Amino acid sequence: MTEHDNGDWVVSALCRQVDPDLWFPEQGGGGAAHVKMVKKICRECPVRQECLDLGLDERYGIWGGYSERERRYMRKGFVVGSPLPRGRWSA
Ligand code: SF4
Image 1 (tube, rainbow, N blue to C red):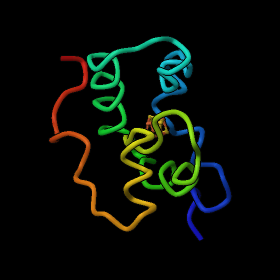
Image 2 (tube, helix red, strand yellow):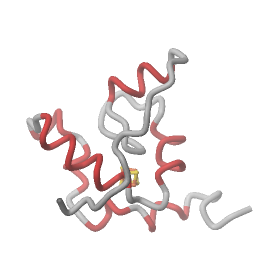
Image 3 (cartoon, rainbow, N blue to C red):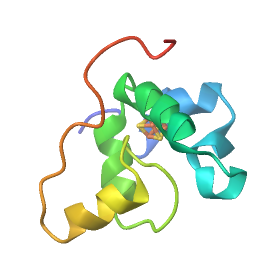
Image 4 (cartoon, helix red, strand yellow):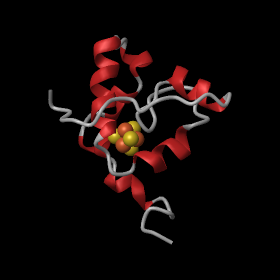
């Protein structure tokens, strides 16, 4: 068992250091640039897989660096590529 298996992974989430509402762009009216910025942060997050495991079935928001539409495709069995190439998220 790792430290992340019991839900403690949340404390390592990068989105805790920023406004978590940014991960729900449908509530804030975020456009493509907004989603791209959020995905860049997720790409560097050390608990991305744990986040995706939890959020795969969530209807709203960006989880594990994947949008609602991307997770919907994943649930249907499609392979969805990495949200963004590795790189700095501070642009
Ligand atoms: S991968 Fe998940 S936990 Fe990490 S920053 Fe993105 S939404 Fe937050």
